[in-house]
Image (cartoon, rainbow, N blue to C red; front, side, top):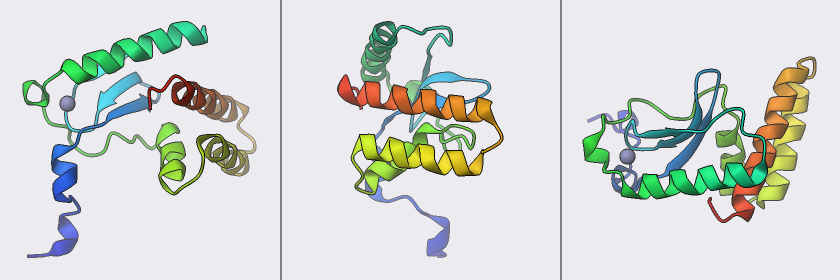
Amino acid sequence: MDSSTDHRSPQQKTARELIWTSNHSFHGWTCSQCEWNSPIPTLLNDPEAKTAFDRLAAGKFRDHKCADHLSRLGSADDADSFTPRIRKLVTQGFKPKDAVELFLQEIALEYRNQPKVLAQAKADGEDFLRRVRAGLI
Ligand SMILES: [Zn+2]
């Protein structure tokens, strides 16, 4: 048995997480364990409306049964989605606000000539902090 092929711990097999996914094709919440998702309107600009949608998605997430959906293939962490990078910094011990700041510094170096990417990263960072304040994540 090659231990390097199975990265899943027993805990990861049972615990499911509400994951924010934002990329070119999808903006919304997804489940870490199955294909359940709850898209958020991309034109939503009002922070309070966004939070209301987030709460709605969190409620639907709690009610869904992973068994009723296809199981998720691969990682929900899309390469062009920024939020997983912020989450990673937080799990490393950074406070959310510091994590977002650090993340934006990294992005500014990586994408220094791509203002559109920087604007998206900034928006994702602000969304992340808003959700932390709202107690959603
Ligand atoms: Zn699920």
